Each structure stands twice: as C-alpha cells, then as structure tokens.
Length: 129
Image 1 (cartoon, helix red, strand yellow):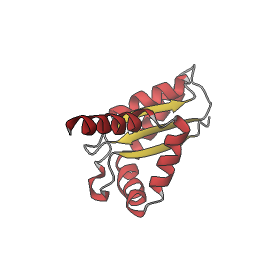
Image 2 (cartoon, helix red, strand yellow):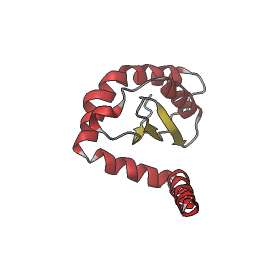
Image 3 (cartoon, rainbow, N blue to C red):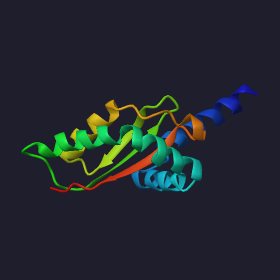
Image 4 (cartoon, helix red, strand yellow):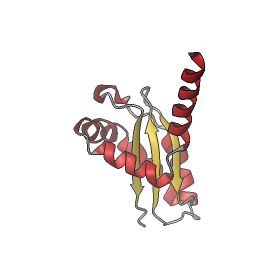
C-alpha cells in the first residue's frame, strides 16, 4: 500500500515543480489575481506594504550607467511566511537582475488572510527613462 502512495506523492510533487513553464506561470498568476481574495491581498495589502521599497529598488537599478531600458516580467510565488520564492524573470537584463535581487530581499506580508499561499504572482515592469 505504501508504494502507490509514495509514487503518487512523487508524481504530484514533480509535476508541481516542473510542469509550469514561464508562460504557464504567468497564466496561473493572472488566473489567481482574478479571485477577489487574491486581488484584495495584492492591491490592499502587499503592494501598499512594499510598493515604495520596490520603487526605490528600481530607482537604484535604473540610475546605473549601464542600466537597460528594456521592459521585463517577473513570476514568483509568495510563501505563507511572506517571502518571494521560485522567482524567474525574462529577459535577463542587468536592470532586471538588479531589481530581482532587491525584490527577493523585500518581505511581502504573508498572504494568510486570503488563504491563497503559496501565491503565484506576475509583475510586468516597464522601464522608463
């Protein structure tokens, strides 16, 4: 009896980690944001709590002489503990690398009130001079 359970757990675990491509993760995050509790968490809790920190990080990144002005997209999960995990981004410009390094050091509030963590998110960054 334990062998089928172990095999099932391995398959479920491996599909969760390896199945989602970058574009699939964007789609998952977009669908999650369509749910009212997730939308409320993102726009009434998370962004108000860390938005100014993210803006400051971006200002530092774009102030560098070699800063790329190319837009980029980030996908990540927010853990139940309030940490950015499984972070990926495209394209991998120097500005995107700089921003993501600062972003992962920022702690969003845990998404516990919406019972939605780990929560997939997508952030589309527009880099303007």
